[in-house]
Amino acid sequence: MTVLSVDRKMEIIDYYNKNPEQILNMLVDMQFESTDGYIDQQTARFVAEELKITETRIYEMITFYSILKEIPQARYVIKICNSAPCQFSGGNFIRNALKEILGTEENETTDDGLFMYHGMPCFSACAQDPMIKIKDRVFANLSIPKLQTLIIDLKAGKYPDLYSGGN
Image (cartoon, rainbow, N blue to C red; front, side, top):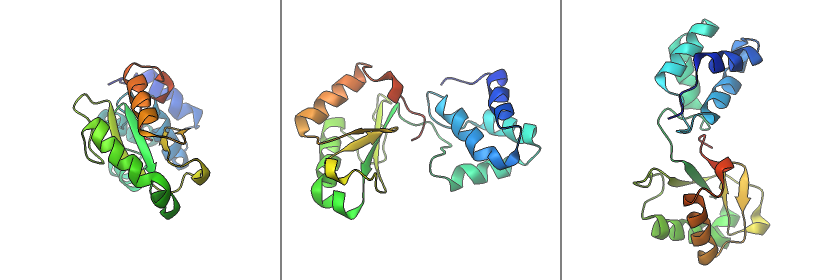
């Protein structure tokens, strides 16, 4: 895991003027800078102390907002649209293909720690289905060969900007 230095954590907190109303933004920024894509206990405690709030409040945020994670995530978190239109036009195809290609069930991390996949609400890209989303990037109009090539490319590090950070 890339553990953020105390100085970097302070930079993020200071960027938001130590405003407790900006906790979510602070935690998201810190999580995105972690290669394991989660808020570790040390970071939660540090933020709580700096903002003079309870650590319980930090964990309330982490467990309430699905963007925040309290356990390490895979390097690449693949999102599949689970809205009704996409389920009819390719969502299940993608889910089944990923299960086959990665050898894991939904919401499970592969043994090498590189991949996990799960459904999430509409991406507003129905015309591009079947598709997946990694971080903010949509990979559209997928076929099994395109999906296999994408997985190979991700394993080879072709998309370093898509490393996890719980999205």
